[in-house]
Length: 529
Image (tube, rainbow, N blue to C red; front, side, top):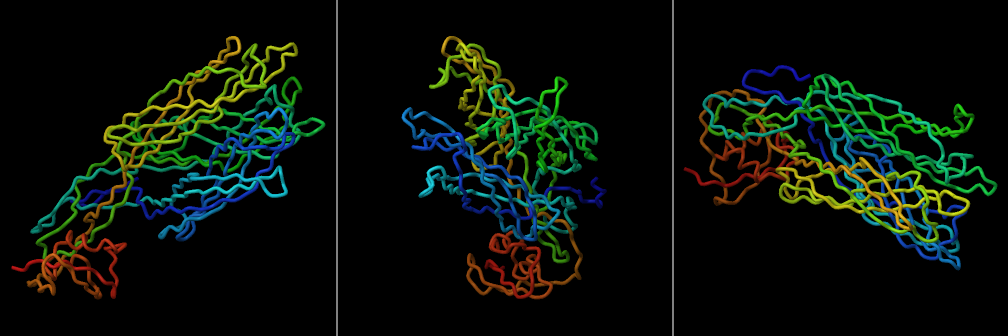
């Protein structure tokens, strides 16, 4: 809870950006064609995605652990030249140097796959070398209380600006366990041994109550396992289920904006759960860490410069925060009709239709709009129109393009886009399948607000100081060596230069409120008299 501020000031609690940086790194690994998949003659396409699994903050450094996932479509090395696909995962660990980072702060990490290459290993026809270029961006923030002076000191001339920031009203964290029990799909063999699991969690909705934030989401778990068959083939299956939980956030009130981050701390799959009919089922147990913060916009008239104050020594604090420009949603309907691909048989009856993954491929800001491109990976399970009525599955990628209106959005601002499939269905007629999906797209546009605001004033002994003549023509600058007790304001006052003029020519100084003896600052030359 934010405490009371002194008269003439207003206290804000903000997520202050401590530091941020972006690096590129190369991830290398080996992907092997699993049994019983045939050998590869030619790779047709490679679909890649990346997921951050853990983030650790060290002094001046952020360590990022993640997984690079690949889905490779290829032509088989056999007379029929059938098309197959295989999955592969490569774990990686990298770091970003972020000056000022300390354990206990908050890290926002974003990883993008810029390029990936897949080449066959010499002498190993079923092994492929993978090299991927990743762009890793890390931003460090911490909650900071700031008392902003809103009343101009007596006798001074003040330059003010109305600024709007997200005022943090409360934060909270909670660990929750979510579980789901489900059957292996009919077209898949039973599970003998689980080899690997991968989990993706998305927040689909949030609601703010008094001192509480309700979080709704979906968890998608991908399981690689050994089939309980004589040849022990390796298979993969997906399962998506919903969850709803809450986080206590003291100070939260209905109508506030809320930010929620979810991290998967552990995932466990038990393949030997017996049901009431004595059949074996799968049970997934996930431990999630929910971090929530409630914010509300606060508009403050801040003092950004002081003039004609010979008896006041001011302290300015740099505010660097992410400010919300706007957020909105839109729905898009996707429809696609296609024939079952060879060598899949025709459809007699569709059993199930699911959306395995939604990917945003591009987001572009224009005036008051965000243009979004993406794709939905769907899976259709059906009974074949054959005598044995075997069960088959077919995958289909559904591209979409839409826009979301966000008033105030402008090119160059930051945008975060999320998409979820709200409804999906498929029907069949003859040899054709028609699939329809409803996708909700949410776009959140923010900008980084950086301002130097007056936070403290100290009275000094009244003196009459005549500005010292500057040693260069007006319009140029000269160098000044900082002495004990100097501030940017007092140096400028000595030469008849305003604080804003001093700041304009000293952008190379990381923290102008922390000058140290021996540092060199620039002083602009002004006309005297």
